[in-house]
Image (cartoon, rainbow, N blue to C red; front, side, top):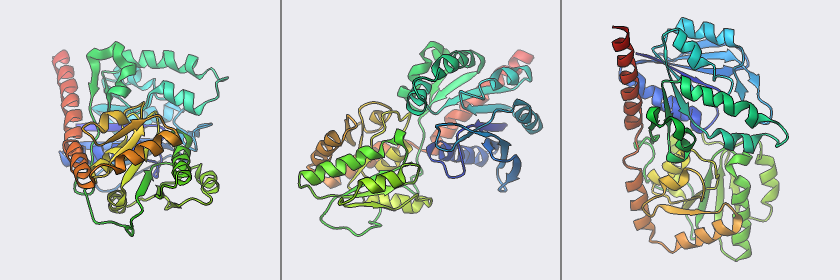
Length: 371
């Protein structure tokens, strides 16, 4: 079958959503299917890598989004989709692409909404309260829920906003490449000082400033720790000004997955304080490397650290500092084993197979209806 992954708010260097789409798409191709990724860009273009096709449709910059783009020109996208002739359109957007399911149905194409975020969280985080975004978007999403053939979420937290369409809702956890993310030798010099890692985009919704607050809190308590920020984003310069006098290092975005895995293995603790994670790929990757994670007490991160693989706390400097000190009391070797065990069953192969099972079922029903 030909699966078209259609998404807004991704760039060649963006984080979890882009990586998830790429990882799942590679598994589709490995299983003999055709897969095309359609995203917005500054200009329209098409290219391939020998395995997959990539289509970029011209999109506009979205205010307050940190530089992301969205596809708004329907005719250009319709033309691209008709030329691609997909069997399934996997829609990873609930805003400017909400019209696609109804259009696709008119052309005999099945659609699945792959929800990467809770839209109420996004609106709350990224837009001023005076903008009537919720009143505009929520009715659109309600229609989209009805029009798609199925909805896929990566966590129970993400699935909560689709409880009214439970009959078409699938919860499919994302995965991790265990050939890359596993306990390794340290990539940075080990000392008696514990290493604390933040791995993610340096933007407000990821709460990197809370990690800085935790570093300062530990310093005030006389607790020595080395903080490493692996990532880039709009808050980097502000964060660098905030860490004066603290043992903090910014290593930038780590594009090489092996380097990232080695860095995660080197850490004693990873901190992922965003209260709006709808899965948390970096959390899972840290666990696969044997490193426990401190997560926010809201969001999907809680679902990943079960089995004694970390702690969930209010995302504040003081609470994270408390959690860090508690984790240091644990046996490092025992903690490592628990983390690896927790991550073991979450694989991209399993994730892709569940998607393909859903898609095969949808297409089979289409054939039965046409017969």
